[in-house]
Image 1 (cartoon, rainbow, N blue to C red):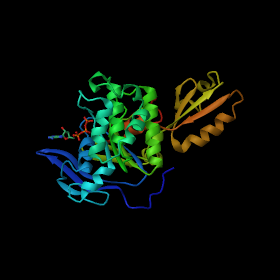
Image 2: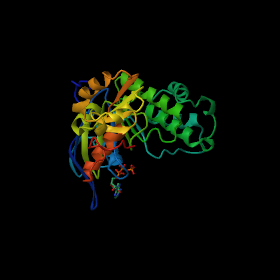
Image 3: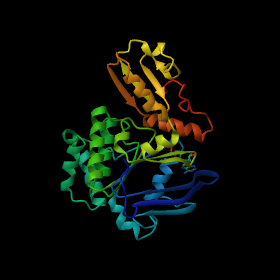
Image 4: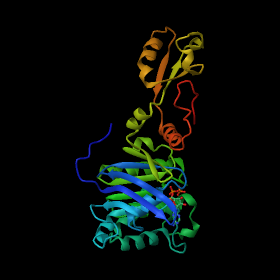
Length: 317
Ligand SMILES: Nc1ncnc2c1ncn2[C@@H]1O[C@H](COP(=O)(O)OP(=O)(O)OP(=O)(O)O)[C@@H](O)[C@H]1O
């Protein structure tokens, strides 16, 4: 369920365009990010994700439209103090290799006026305590990414911009990363997670923006996007031993001996028919996951027909 956001937005973009010379990196981009909201910003390479991050960080000006962060123009002098409330993990994180992990964080803590006592706790949170006094040049890719996250989390930022945050993290570290995201959110932070679709991200975001070629193709909660896209629902059964194949009511939807793909509006009717079958041992209903929602909208954006649009199509991964 989507949360309600009564307060004023932390970030708002309205009618934003960005041109790099002749390249239109963004066109007519509108969205708002509210306190305590986690938003996934999804798009392929070159879609415009990093450009949106840079606009919010005040690194580049918009060519058109309005960008506000904490109700200020992020390029203005007045935005200087507010910038300390922003945490940023760039896509390709790199540090001074000669420094130790602890020294890197001390350096960033000074820049952000964060007391250095917070450093050891952060290093523990990202699982780097054992390596904090080793030079960063001895760190693996995953360890560098963890140090990048610790750097972004410094000072409990009110706004976090994370570009491809789980790249290079193993499954345990990915889980720990999402636990940190959930914790920061529960403390009121607003977060933008920027990526191609991330494994395991969907339980942790309130809304998704899908972007392609600099244009927003879709925005909303996952359930809103699913509804708009009218994506079919997978129904998995157990115990029927091939009976579905023999039954004309189910064969149009059959995609595996024990699995149906049915349009949302027919879901309940089909489930009712299934539960009447004596041999049915179990039933599982799975709505389209983020990956399928994403593929659907990208297919629309490029004019290609989505393989998920028809209930007779097989499952797509
Ligand atoms: N400084 C620049 N000069 C010219 N073109 C640029 C510049 N920065 C970005 N672009 C172009 O703007 C478009 C959007 O780039 P952007 O880096 O925002 O995409 P992205 O979604 O972050 O991609 P990726 O997932 O590969 O990081 C691309 O076509 C890119 O080539």
